[in-house]
Image (cartoon, rainbow, N blue to C red; front, top):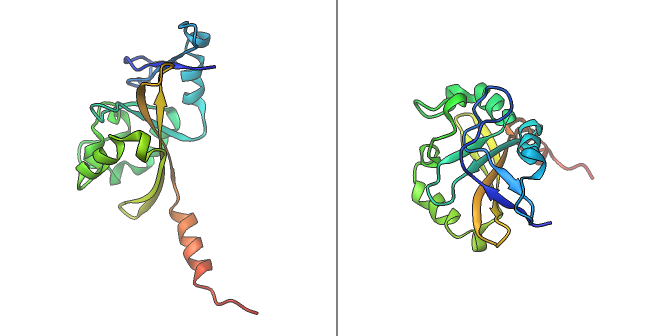
Length: 165
C-alpha cells in the first residue's frame, strides 16, 4: 500500500505537543486508522524525529526522543530543550549547516544516510531516510537515532586488544 503524508502540525495523544506530527494516508486518501500510524511512532522504543525537507525545521519528535533528549539537555545548544525541539532548525546542531543542508537537499542521491556524531562526550548514531508521498514527492525527512557512546567505547577496547593465536 502506498502512503501519503500530511505534515501539518498536530497534537499527539495526551496533552504533550509533538509538533508537526503527521498522518499517513492510504492510497484511497483516507486517514489510516485515525492517525494510528502516528500513534505507533509515538510508542516506538526508538528515537524518531521528523524534519521538513524545505525548511529543515524539526516537525515531529516521538516520546522516546523527548525522553532521551531530556537526559541530554545539558549538552544541547543554548535555548534548545527536549520540550522545544519541535520547531527548531536542524542548523542549531551543526557548525557548518550548509554541509547537512546540501546532503539532505538531494535525497535521491544521498539518502538513506548514516553517521555517528559527537554531542559533547556522547556519541549518537543517526539514520536519515526520506518519507515520500503516494505520488513520489518528498514529504519529510525522518531521523532515527541512538546514543551509542558505551557501545563505541567497548568496540574501541575490543579492537585494541591483542589477538591471541
